[in-house]
Image (cartoon, rainbow, N blue to C red; front, side, top):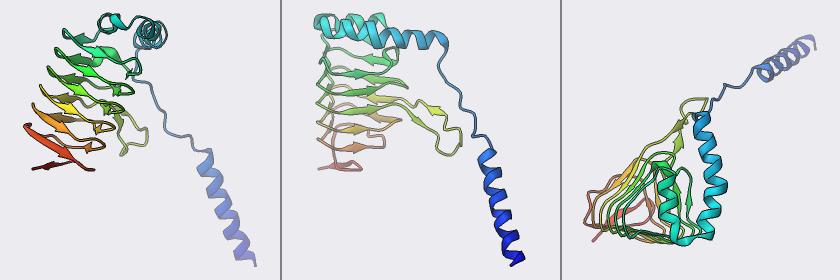
Length: 189
């Protein structure tokens, strides 16, 4: 009886010790200036974005994005950090697209991003207990098309003339001049 009681006390002590241990400290990667600009982008920038559709490229440029000529962005496009966005000429980004620009996203000329596509240039290092932010880039080559509800993972580069079919999920680089389909996306003939 006494040994069972000792074991229970030891287990309870170990649980208390584990609960008292502080979790790893997480630090923000954003400078105070970046936090302020993100706040202004999320409030004033979004208001201008919605009210003045003809000024969307101008607003993005004011917040540090590099936008070519003849680009159009739908009202419900979500751009997290505009200064990490580079867009070539004559690009179109459709409704409800997410450009998760924690890292850089670069679109070549004549790129089309269709409805609800998600380009995710940010993640966390899951091997580290503090889950530090990672910001790998995404590059989409000239004359490419990303279909409805497609997903482009961090650190992916698609060469020119790439077609990503609807609902495909791309996790690796592709040289271009091809079509991708499926999850994970594979080149189709």
